Image 1 (cartoon, rainbow, N blue to C red):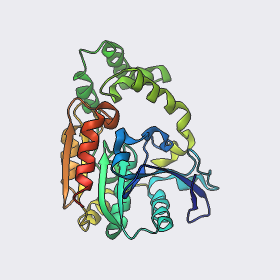
Image 2 (cartoon, helix red, strand yellow):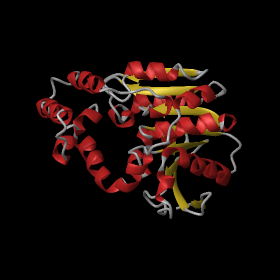
Image 3 (tube, helix red, strand yellow):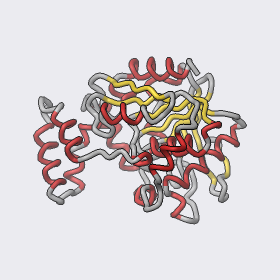
Image 4 (tube, rainbow, N blue to C red):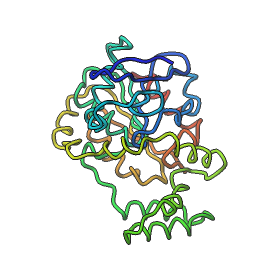
Length: 281
């Protein structure tokens, strides 16, 4: 397992899978170990995946200063990995919460990004807000599923301020296009892959300056793919379209019947879209 030192001396780990040009992959959660990526639906047949364990997660060390878990401060860890790999420019993939991290990296270091892939990305970094109505509308698309009544009741409990672990668990099927054994195992693994303390600091006050980030993104010459799931709420396809429009060379793709983990919902579709996009850079 390769490691490198971050700017503050914290030892960070990453995992390599597949062959070809490197693709740096930043996991979401926030602050979930990169193991949940697997092989990204078989993307390893086209690219060498560099799966970073963010500080305090997976095989990476816990930093001395927990304030360094804040999203904007993790940008320097991504840059340290680029330097460690000796790459002049990088192809970068950010999933979910790390859509924010990948976006901040691109805004801060636009000349270091060759291509950017944002998979069902969170949009706090640019000030796009996912509302309770967005969550409800996305959930309603799944009304025919056997687990839907429990999920609908859970949304009501959350709206009433009565969220519990059991309530949140009832929403788990909404994150997957198919609530099958693979999805359930993937969900269960998350309980041991996430650093809750780090997650609490990820979105700490001061992490984002949306107007400044939007302005900085206008200097990004790299092509950008924003990939959304038809059934996902964060972002839903409309938010993904708005997000893609913030980049000079941004495009949106929507996975039919997909949710928050598109490489599980339809691996062939996911790999075809991402590999094809990256082949153009």
